[in-house]
Length: 354
Figure 1 (cartoon, rainbow, N blue to C red):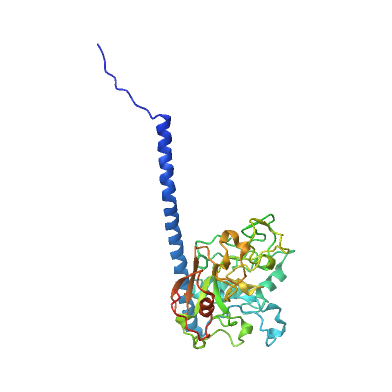
Figure 2 (cartoon, rainbow, N blue to C red):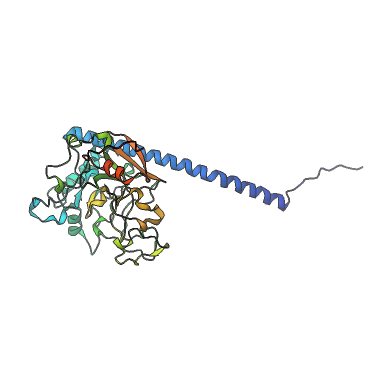
């Protein structure tokens, strides 16, 4: 008797390779869309962070009838606290001041209680460096307890910067090293993606200033003569710089980290305040500090200045204005308009800038 048996057809090697190739093409087509969707979600979260930051600043102003100072540092004009101007760029910053208004009251109370009676009490000029000097072992000290906290609200999810300031770091776009950071007392502190608007090409006329720029304290809304809707509160600024000789470098990358002399990375953005430099907490809208500093995050060594608005998004930065409105501003915005947006009293018409 003859039995019919069904035969099974297996994939040939060629067919298998064709299937794999098709899957690869589909993945290649879908991956950019997935990445774009994820970045859109991160950018939305960044916008929400800034929206809440604007609300917190309004609540602070309602409670104290003025905005916080950008840095509670030395008052160089009146020899505040009986010392020199050595600490005018060192001290707790505006992000500490608004902690109770962003559901971080416990952290604020921790910083307040442990500092009482010490050289690093809240409101004391030079608090960050003073703590380091008193607690260091060689070049390093643990941060003020609580200062190491990573506050997700203060970080844009697109950021590629470390969550805490490392002791050594290679600036993106460099090779070799990594070198030690410039201000040793910044090491260990939680980083931030946002900074206050400190000034413009007209001078230190931003909405949040350092103590020595106005010994009476923070700005009152009445001082914002350009109007809150025309004046920047804060913006993304999430990068570091290296030697001044590297500013605007346009040669081949990566470049040896020590090619420009002093290789130490500096101006770390930290929420605790000014760690020896006001660029820790403030940007400037000067014409030589353009949005995104004329470089991408992967080539940060090319940054043209140390106080630019800077983000890890493509094409611009997220900002919040005095009226609480959030805007994504293009890096192609003309420098004069950017300057005027950073000033609270330039008196210049802005025109259509979005």
